[in-house]
Image (cartoon, rainbow, N blue to C red):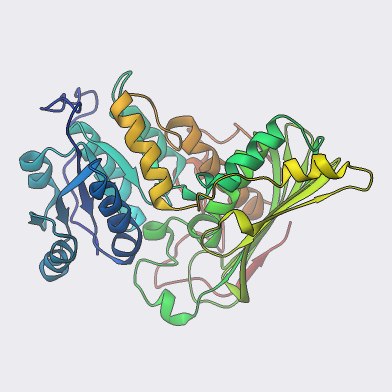
Length: 401
Protein backbone atom coordinates (compact mmCIF):
# COMPACT_ATOMS: atom_id res chain seq x y z
CA UNK A 1 0.00 0.00 0.00
CA UNK A 2 1.07 3.59 -0.50
CA UNK A 3 1.60 6.34 1.99
CA UNK A 4 -0.21 9.64 1.65
CA UNK A 5 1.52 12.54 -0.03
CA UNK A 6 4.15 14.16 2.17
CA UNK A 7 4.80 17.91 1.97
CA UNK A 8 8.17 18.68 0.46
CA UNK A 9 10.25 21.51 1.96
CA UNK A 10 11.30 24.33 -0.34
CA UNK A 11 14.07 23.61 -2.81
CA UNK A 12 17.46 24.63 -1.55
CA UNK A 13 16.71 23.80 2.10
CA UNK A 14 19.90 22.17 3.40
CA UNK A 15 19.31 18.68 4.78
CA UNK A 16 19.96 18.39 8.52
CA UNK A 17 22.89 16.41 9.78
CA UNK A 18 21.93 13.03 11.27
CA UNK A 19 21.68 13.48 15.02
CA UNK A 20 24.06 10.70 16.03
CA UNK A 21 27.32 9.69 14.31
CA UNK A 22 27.09 6.34 12.56
CA UNK A 23 30.32 4.98 13.99
CA UNK A 24 29.71 2.15 16.44
CA UNK A 25 25.97 1.80 15.94
CA UNK A 26 23.56 0.13 13.51
CA UNK A 27 22.08 2.11 10.65
CA UNK A 28 18.55 3.15 11.59
CA UNK A 29 16.21 2.17 8.75
CA UNK A 30 12.55 2.82 8.00
CA UNK A 31 10.33 1.12 5.40
CA UNK A 32 7.71 3.17 3.54
CA UNK A 33 5.02 1.02 1.93
CA UNK A 34 4.40 -2.47 3.31
CA UNK A 35 3.17 -4.37 0.24
CA UNK A 36 4.58 -7.48 -1.38
CA UNK A 37 8.00 -6.11 -2.38
CA UNK A 38 8.57 -4.81 1.14
CA UNK A 39 7.54 -8.10 2.75
CA UNK A 40 9.37 -10.42 0.35
CA UNK A 41 12.57 -8.49 -0.34
CA UNK A 42 13.25 -5.39 1.75
CA UNK A 43 12.30 -6.71 5.17
CA UNK A 44 14.29 -9.99 4.85
CA UNK A 45 17.37 -8.07 3.62
CA UNK A 46 17.14 -5.58 6.47
CA UNK A 47 16.53 -8.40 8.96
CA UNK A 48 19.65 -10.22 7.79
CA UNK A 49 21.70 -7.04 8.14
CA UNK A 50 20.20 -6.53 11.59
CA UNK A 51 21.26 -10.03 12.64
CA UNK A 52 24.80 -9.03 11.75
CA UNK A 53 24.55 -5.82 13.76
CA UNK A 54 24.65 -3.54 10.71
CA UNK A 55 21.11 -2.16 10.79
CA UNK A 56 17.93 -1.89 12.80
CA UNK A 57 14.46 -1.21 11.43
CA UNK A 58 12.97 1.50 13.63
CA UNK A 59 9.69 2.24 11.82
CA UNK A 60 7.35 1.38 8.96
CA UNK A 61 4.74 3.49 7.19
CA UNK A 62 1.56 2.59 5.30
CA UNK A 63 -1.81 4.31 4.90
CA UNK A 64 -3.45 1.01 5.86
CA UNK A 65 -3.21 0.84 9.66
CA UNK A 66 -3.86 -2.91 9.82
CA UNK A 67 -1.27 -3.60 7.12
CA UNK A 68 1.49 -1.59 8.75
CA UNK A 69 0.78 -3.06 12.18
CA UNK A 70 0.91 -6.59 10.75
CA UNK A 71 4.17 -5.73 8.96
CA UNK A 72 5.69 -4.40 12.17
CA UNK A 73 4.59 -7.49 14.07
CA UNK A 74 6.14 -9.70 11.40
CA UNK A 75 9.45 -7.87 11.50
CA UNK A 76 9.64 -6.91 15.17
CA UNK A 77 9.53 -3.23 14.21
CA UNK A 78 8.75 -0.94 17.15
CA UNK A 79 6.92 1.96 15.50
CA UNK A 80 4.05 1.90 12.99
CA UNK A 81 2.87 5.04 11.17
CA UNK A 82 0.20 5.93 8.64
CA UNK A 83 1.94 9.18 7.68
CA UNK A 84 5.55 9.58 6.57
CA UNK A 85 6.08 13.13 7.87
CA UNK A 86 5.82 12.40 11.61
CA UNK A 87 7.90 9.25 11.16
CA UNK A 88 10.75 11.27 9.65
CA UNK A 89 10.45 13.92 12.34
CA UNK A 90 10.20 11.57 15.31
CA UNK A 91 12.41 8.62 14.33
CA UNK A 92 15.13 10.40 12.29
CA UNK A 93 16.14 7.33 10.27
CA UNK A 94 19.50 7.16 8.51
CA UNK A 95 18.01 5.17 5.62
CA UNK A 96 14.50 5.07 4.17
CA UNK A 97 13.52 2.27 1.81
CA UNK A 98 10.61 3.24 -0.44
CA UNK A 99 8.29 0.46 -1.62
CA UNK A 100 5.24 2.44 -2.75
CA UNK A 101 3.72 2.88 -6.24
CA UNK A 102 5.90 4.91 -8.62
CA UNK A 103 3.80 8.10 -8.66
CA UNK A 104 4.75 8.67 -5.00
CA UNK A 105 8.48 8.07 -5.33
CA UNK A 106 9.63 11.61 -6.17
CA UNK A 107 7.75 13.30 -3.36
CA UNK A 108 8.64 10.70 -0.75
CA UNK A 109 12.30 10.50 -1.79
CA UNK A 110 12.75 14.26 -1.65
CA UNK A 111 11.02 14.41 1.75
CA UNK A 112 13.38 11.76 3.15
CA UNK A 113 16.45 13.49 1.71
CA UNK A 114 15.38 16.81 3.20
CA UNK A 115 15.04 15.06 6.55
CA UNK A 116 18.68 13.95 6.30
CA UNK A 117 18.00 10.30 5.40
CA UNK A 118 19.56 8.35 2.57
CA UNK A 119 17.02 6.65 0.29
CA UNK A 120 16.79 3.28 -1.39
CA UNK A 121 13.85 3.41 -3.80
CA UNK A 122 12.20 0.56 -5.64
CA UNK A 123 12.02 0.60 -9.42
CA UNK A 124 10.80 2.33 -11.42
CA UNK A 125 12.55 5.11 -9.51
CA UNK A 126 10.27 7.92 -10.74
CA UNK A 127 7.90 8.34 -13.71
CA UNK A 128 10.15 10.60 -15.81
CA UNK A 129 13.62 12.08 -16.22
CA UNK A 130 12.40 15.43 -14.92
CA UNK A 131 11.45 13.75 -11.65
CA UNK A 132 14.80 11.99 -11.42
CA UNK A 133 16.65 15.26 -11.91
CA UNK A 134 14.53 16.87 -9.18
CA UNK A 135 15.47 14.06 -6.81
CA UNK A 136 19.15 14.41 -7.64
CA UNK A 137 18.93 18.17 -7.03
CA UNK A 138 17.58 17.45 -3.54
CA UNK A 139 20.54 15.28 -2.55
CA UNK A 140 23.08 16.62 -0.10
CA UNK A 141 26.50 17.98 -0.91
CA UNK A 142 29.57 15.73 -0.88
CA UNK A 143 28.91 12.97 1.63
CA UNK A 144 25.16 12.71 1.13
CA UNK A 145 22.39 12.04 1.77
CA UNK A 146 21.97 10.29 -1.58
CA UNK A 147 19.07 8.45 -3.23
CA UNK A 148 19.77 5.07 -4.86
CA UNK A 149 17.51 2.93 -7.04
CA UNK A 150 16.92 -0.77 -6.36
CA UNK A 151 18.90 -2.35 -9.22
CA UNK A 152 19.84 -5.60 -7.54
CA UNK A 153 20.78 -7.55 -10.68
CA UNK A 154 24.04 -5.62 -10.90
CA UNK A 155 25.17 -6.87 -7.53
CA UNK A 156 25.56 -10.64 -7.86
CA UNK A 157 29.00 -12.20 -8.14
CA UNK A 158 28.19 -13.38 -11.67
CA UNK A 159 27.63 -9.85 -12.96
CA UNK A 160 30.77 -8.62 -11.21
CA UNK A 161 32.86 -11.37 -12.81
CA UNK A 162 31.49 -10.82 -16.32
CA UNK A 163 31.74 -7.05 -16.00
CA UNK A 164 35.44 -7.45 -15.19
CA UNK A 165 36.04 -9.83 -18.13
CA UNK A 166 34.33 -7.41 -20.51
CA UNK A 167 36.14 -4.37 -19.15
CA UNK A 168 39.47 -6.13 -19.63
CA UNK A 169 38.35 -7.44 -23.07
CA UNK A 170 39.56 -10.86 -21.98
CA UNK A 171 37.06 -12.40 -24.40
CA UNK A 172 37.69 -9.77 -27.07
CA UNK A 173 35.44 -6.89 -28.03
CA UNK A 174 31.69 -7.17 -27.35
CA UNK A 175 29.94 -7.28 -30.74
CA UNK A 176 26.32 -8.42 -30.47
CA UNK A 177 23.99 -8.51 -27.47
CA UNK A 178 20.46 -9.56 -26.62
CA UNK A 179 18.42 -8.36 -23.65
CA UNK A 180 15.14 -10.15 -22.97
CA UNK A 181 12.45 -9.71 -20.34
CA UNK A 182 9.55 -11.83 -21.55
CA UNK A 183 7.12 -12.33 -18.70
CA UNK A 184 3.40 -13.03 -18.35
CA UNK A 185 0.84 -10.86 -16.57
CA UNK A 186 -2.90 -11.51 -16.76
CA UNK A 187 -5.92 -9.23 -16.44
CA UNK A 188 -6.01 -9.69 -12.67
CA UNK A 189 -2.53 -8.18 -12.43
CA UNK A 190 -3.73 -5.04 -14.20
CA UNK A 191 -6.87 -4.85 -12.05
CA UNK A 192 -4.70 -3.06 -9.47
CA UNK A 193 -5.77 0.55 -10.14
CA UNK A 194 -2.33 2.13 -10.48
CA UNK A 195 -0.93 -0.43 -12.93
CA UNK A 196 -0.90 0.17 -16.68
CA UNK A 197 -1.48 3.91 -16.31
CA UNK A 198 1.06 6.58 -17.27
CA UNK A 199 0.19 8.86 -14.37
CA UNK A 200 0.61 6.21 -11.68
CA UNK A 201 2.99 3.53 -12.99
CA UNK A 202 4.95 5.77 -15.33
CA UNK A 203 5.21 3.19 -18.13
CA UNK A 204 4.55 -0.39 -19.19
CA UNK A 205 6.84 -3.43 -19.20
CA UNK A 206 9.81 -1.47 -20.59
CA UNK A 207 9.67 0.68 -17.45
CA UNK A 208 8.26 -1.60 -14.77
CA UNK A 209 9.66 -5.00 -15.76
CA UNK A 210 12.48 -4.78 -18.30
CA UNK A 211 14.36 -2.06 -16.43
CA UNK A 212 16.40 -4.66 -14.51
CA UNK A 213 17.77 -6.51 -17.54
CA UNK A 214 18.32 -3.26 -19.46
CA UNK A 215 20.20 -1.81 -16.51
CA UNK A 216 22.35 -4.94 -16.31
CA UNK A 217 23.06 -4.71 -20.05
CA UNK A 218 24.20 -1.10 -19.64
CA UNK A 219 26.28 -2.01 -16.62
CA UNK A 220 28.08 -4.67 -18.66
CA UNK A 221 28.47 -2.85 -22.00
CA UNK A 222 28.78 0.79 -21.01
CA UNK A 223 27.20 3.86 -22.63
CA UNK A 224 24.70 3.50 -25.48
CA UNK A 225 24.61 5.95 -28.37
CA UNK A 226 21.27 5.49 -30.18
CA UNK A 227 18.05 3.48 -30.07
CA UNK A 228 15.31 2.55 -32.54
CA UNK A 229 12.14 0.99 -31.11
CA UNK A 230 8.60 -0.30 -31.60
CA UNK A 231 5.81 -0.69 -29.04
CA UNK A 232 2.42 -2.37 -29.04
CA UNK A 233 -0.71 -2.61 -26.94
CA UNK A 234 -1.78 -6.05 -28.07
CA UNK A 235 -3.76 -7.68 -25.24
CA UNK A 236 -4.33 -5.62 -22.12
CA UNK A 237 -6.81 -2.77 -21.63
CA UNK A 238 -4.19 -0.32 -20.41
CA UNK A 239 -2.82 3.11 -21.35
CA UNK A 240 0.77 1.92 -21.62
CA UNK A 241 2.29 -0.64 -23.96
CA UNK A 242 2.31 -4.35 -23.10
CA UNK A 243 5.22 -5.23 -25.41
CA UNK A 244 8.18 -3.39 -26.94
CA UNK A 245 11.25 -4.17 -29.00
CA UNK A 246 14.33 -2.06 -29.65
CA UNK A 247 17.66 -1.96 -31.45
CA UNK A 248 20.43 -0.28 -29.47
CA UNK A 249 23.85 0.84 -30.65
CA UNK A 250 26.55 1.26 -28.01
CA UNK A 251 29.43 3.73 -28.06
CA UNK A 252 31.75 0.74 -28.39
CA UNK A 253 30.05 -0.15 -31.67
CA UNK A 254 28.25 -3.19 -30.25
CA UNK A 255 24.65 -3.73 -31.36
CA UNK A 256 21.88 -5.10 -29.13
CA UNK A 257 18.28 -6.20 -29.39
CA UNK A 258 15.93 -5.56 -26.47
CA UNK A 259 12.54 -7.24 -25.93
CA UNK A 260 10.16 -6.40 -23.07
CA UNK A 261 6.86 -8.27 -22.80
CA UNK A 262 4.12 -9.20 -20.35
CA UNK A 263 2.49 -11.46 -22.96
CA UNK A 264 4.85 -14.44 -22.77
CA UNK A 265 3.64 -17.64 -21.01
CA UNK A 266 7.15 -19.14 -21.09
CA UNK A 267 8.74 -16.56 -18.81
CA UNK A 268 12.44 -15.81 -18.95
CA UNK A 269 14.96 -13.05 -18.27
CA UNK A 270 18.06 -13.21 -20.43
CA UNK A 271 21.17 -11.21 -21.25
CA UNK A 272 23.56 -12.52 -23.91
CA UNK A 273 26.75 -10.89 -25.18
CA UNK A 274 28.68 -12.27 -28.14
CA UNK A 275 32.33 -11.20 -28.04
CA UNK A 276 35.13 -11.90 -30.48
CA UNK A 277 36.34 -14.92 -28.52
CA UNK A 278 33.33 -16.12 -26.53
CA UNK A 279 29.62 -15.84 -25.88
CA UNK A 280 28.49 -15.11 -22.33
CA UNK A 281 24.84 -15.68 -21.43
CA UNK A 282 22.70 -15.28 -18.33
CA UNK A 283 19.32 -17.05 -18.22
CA UNK A 284 17.07 -16.76 -15.15
CA UNK A 285 13.75 -15.20 -14.14
CA UNK A 286 13.77 -12.93 -11.08
CA UNK A 287 17.33 -13.47 -9.80
CA UNK A 288 20.44 -15.43 -10.58
CA UNK A 289 23.34 -17.38 -9.08
CA UNK A 290 26.72 -18.16 -10.63
CA UNK A 291 25.32 -21.37 -12.13
CA UNK A 292 22.87 -19.34 -14.26
CA UNK A 293 25.74 -17.88 -16.31
CA UNK A 294 27.26 -19.76 -19.25
CA UNK A 295 30.44 -18.91 -21.17
CA UNK A 296 30.99 -20.61 -24.55
CA UNK A 297 34.46 -20.05 -26.01
CA UNK A 298 35.06 -19.64 -29.73
CA UNK A 299 36.95 -22.35 -31.59
CA UNK A 300 40.66 -22.15 -30.92
CA UNK A 301 40.47 -20.63 -27.45
CA UNK A 302 42.85 -22.54 -25.14
CA UNK A 303 41.00 -24.74 -22.66
CA UNK A 304 42.88 -23.28 -19.68
CA UNK A 305 41.90 -19.76 -20.65
CA UNK A 306 38.24 -20.73 -20.99
CA UNK A 307 38.45 -22.44 -17.62
CA UNK A 308 39.63 -19.19 -16.03
CA UNK A 309 36.72 -17.32 -17.62
CA UNK A 310 34.30 -19.84 -16.11
CA UNK A 311 35.71 -19.47 -12.59
CA UNK A 312 33.17 -17.13 -11.01
CA UNK A 313 34.52 -17.52 -7.49
CA UNK A 314 32.32 -17.51 -4.40
CA UNK A 315 28.63 -17.48 -5.26
CA UNK A 316 26.82 -14.28 -4.28
CA UNK A 317 23.33 -14.43 -5.83
CA UNK A 318 21.78 -11.23 -7.13
CA UNK A 319 19.49 -9.92 -4.41
CA UNK A 320 18.27 -6.94 -2.47
CA UNK A 321 20.64 -8.01 0.30
CA UNK A 322 23.69 -7.85 -1.98
CA UNK A 323 22.88 -4.28 -3.01
CA UNK A 324 21.86 -3.26 0.51
CA UNK A 325 25.21 -4.35 1.92
CA UNK A 326 27.05 -2.13 -0.55
CA UNK A 327 24.64 0.76 0.02
CA UNK A 328 25.08 0.68 3.78
CA UNK A 329 28.86 0.54 3.36
CA UNK A 330 28.67 3.64 1.17
CA UNK A 331 26.42 5.36 3.72
CA UNK A 332 28.93 4.73 6.48
CA UNK A 333 31.76 6.01 4.28
CA UNK A 334 29.80 9.04 3.10
CA UNK A 335 30.33 8.00 -0.53
CA UNK A 336 27.86 8.09 -3.41
CA UNK A 337 26.49 4.53 -3.87
CA UNK A 338 26.15 2.72 -7.16
CA UNK A 339 22.67 3.10 -8.59
CA UNK A 340 22.37 6.77 -7.58
CA UNK A 341 22.93 10.02 -9.46
CA UNK A 342 24.09 9.67 -13.08
CA UNK A 343 24.70 5.94 -12.53
CA UNK A 344 21.08 5.41 -11.47
CA UNK A 345 19.75 7.65 -14.25
CA UNK A 346 21.23 5.82 -17.24
CA UNK A 347 18.66 3.01 -17.48
CA UNK A 348 15.80 5.51 -17.15
CA UNK A 349 17.30 7.58 -19.97
CA UNK A 350 17.46 4.54 -22.26
CA UNK A 351 13.86 3.61 -21.42
CA UNK A 352 12.71 7.17 -22.11
CA UNK A 353 14.50 7.13 -25.46
CA UNK A 354 12.90 3.76 -26.26
CA UNK A 355 9.42 5.22 -25.75
CA UNK A 356 10.20 8.36 -27.73
CA UNK A 357 11.58 6.31 -30.62
CA UNK A 358 8.58 3.98 -30.63
CA UNK A 359 5.99 6.74 -30.46
CA UNK A 360 7.64 9.15 -32.92
CA UNK A 361 9.06 6.65 -35.44
CA UNK A 362 12.54 8.15 -35.12
CA UNK A 363 16.03 7.20 -34.01
CA UNK A 364 16.79 8.75 -30.61
CA UNK A 365 20.32 9.54 -29.48
CA UNK A 366 21.64 9.58 -25.94
CA UNK A 367 21.55 13.00 -24.33
CA UNK A 368 18.93 14.55 -26.63
CA UNK A 369 15.98 14.35 -24.21
CA UNK A 370 16.03 17.28 -21.81
CA UNK A 371 13.91 20.19 -20.57
CA UNK A 372 11.50 21.30 -23.27
CA UNK A 373 11.17 17.82 -24.75
CA UNK A 374 7.71 16.36 -23.95
CA UNK A 375 9.31 12.98 -23.17
CA UNK A 376 11.41 14.60 -20.43
CA UNK A 377 8.30 15.03 -18.28
CA UNK A 378 6.18 12.01 -19.33
CA UNK A 379 7.13 8.80 -21.06
CA UNK A 380 4.10 8.95 -23.37
CA UNK A 381 5.29 12.35 -24.61
CA UNK A 382 1.74 13.35 -25.48
CA UNK A 383 1.85 11.03 -28.50
CA UNK A 384 -1.47 10.45 -30.30
CA UNK A 385 -3.04 7.09 -29.39
CA UNK A 386 -0.70 6.79 -26.39
CA UNK A 387 -1.23 9.83 -24.17
CA UNK A 388 -3.90 9.41 -21.47
CA UNK A 389 -7.42 10.15 -22.65
CA UNK A 390 -10.64 10.90 -20.79
CA UNK A 391 -12.62 7.78 -20.05
CA UNK A 392 -9.81 5.23 -19.81
CA UNK A 393 -7.28 3.49 -22.01
CA UNK A 394 -7.07 3.91 -25.73
CA UNK A 395 -8.09 1.16 -28.13
CA UNK A 396 -5.52 -1.56 -28.95
CA UNK A 397 -2.75 0.01 -30.96
CA UNK A 398 0.59 -0.86 -32.49
CA UNK A 399 3.30 1.68 -33.27
CA UNK A 400 5.69 0.57 -36.02
CA UNK A 401 9.24 1.71 -36.37
